Image (cartoon, rainbow, N blue to C red; front, side):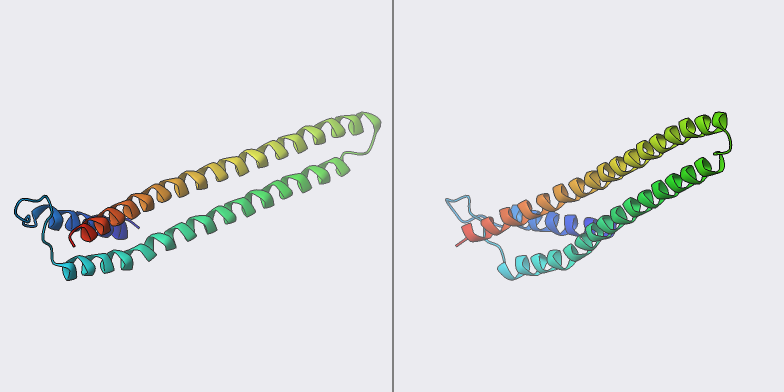
Length: 153
């Protein structure tokens, strides 16, 4: 991702430099640029973007896997707690202690599973939010450059 990201940023910097260094039209703030050069750079940016989109998909897949593993872990903890409860049902005192311990274990397992799910969702949301901001920045820069090109007419 870093390679694609730096490539896109490098190309956007190149676009910016072309526009900044282009000769101005006399008595105007408009500049003269080679549209083919700008179109070539935009094409390179488009080629770099799929890498970032692939990274976003990988993050979503990783999030799903983490949630699946968290649920499997919670199920395993619950099953272990239920098995432990069954083993302890031999006498009244042991049964009371087992019921209490099983309830505590089930509550802990549920709490732990919920915390894992929440943490995973926050982590995935944070990564996707950062990616969304980067893509928005790139999109805004492209839109700005397109507008500058249109203004050249």
